[in-house]
Image (cartoon, rainbow, N blue to C red):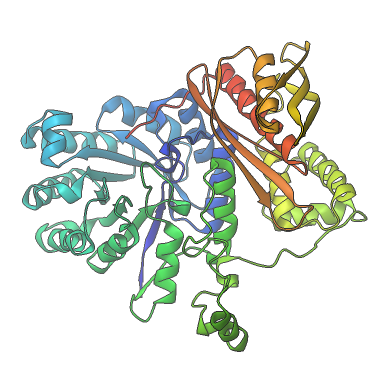
Length: 514
């Protein structure tokens, strides 16, 4: 069976999703989980786009050892140089350089002739190979390119030193037959194609990303690029977990394997969803919470008699297990530490103690503490930037009911150490709370999105809130959890504001790049 390499771009293309803004600690945590997931190569970011992205890529490159790390660059020397400075500490520094090849892009975006595009691509790949042992070249908008021209430029960039050729369906326009035919044409036409790995990169604008990726594999692609949960610009990228599980379940039809540890799928999905704020729809293939739920009486009867009647994927295959009690109020620090390590977290002694304290507080309020509860606590601890002076919630009180006007009173400590207090009314309890917080914070704030979710099930489940604010013109995400939904909402709002403060102090400004 042929091995298909998995190239993950959650930290680059995925982060370009509207409303997603990951800080360095969050990117690093996702990168470590991608390594555990068995990703062959991860695209950690676009180093030339911002100082923050450069630092994040550099940190990931110096931390990750079992997965190849790459960075994105335009066909510009300064971009390539920035990638090298960020990636040179990696065991195998890799570069992903792209240039558009479709007539519409060359004419209206690049304003270059086909000959000029070929010369630029060859020059930049040659320049990159002076630094990088591995260079992937992407023909942006390949699926809308002239096939003869595509074959011509691919042959020349291979001669210039490219080691991977990527043919993206950049705008999700291709059908499986068209996309597969492009790969077949390139494998049959380009004389030196056997010197490189051929890669596919599909967007999901027409809902065809998985089908197109598999069509590419059937016609010569040996690498699939995509993201966890299928996040990304517009309708997103191909969901890598869907491709990998499809190849596994239908191995009778698809003679291909991957290196992914499929039992890490749920954990990887949960982490990406939590940190990006892009929660997975209940009926999503492979990993949605309804993927293994059966409402129909006929289905339930069949599953009880034999699971394979209606379940083609076992929950255990993708790491889904029942939320059983694992620790209680009498559990000690040693047992807690063992569980933290079992979940794959590496905490300093200081953060481990902080997490243990939060766990103990939770056991006083919640009878059963589950893996999902602990996962929420550990994620917040691991990605907290507590060394920066921030707004701190000292007290809040919300009064509401069917016969009175919702009113919120809030006391905050400002980053400068001042005590701030105010009260406001609103149409509902959350609006009253947020109006009060807004009145105490000097930045210009505008709420764009507000979400509230339950961590696990039961009336004592943790609440998790996610918000997106525009703060002084910059979009910023925030998340918070608590047993009380109003407290979780307050924590999420302040988390977004505090992330903005960190962002300002570290000049970590994200620039969305195509």
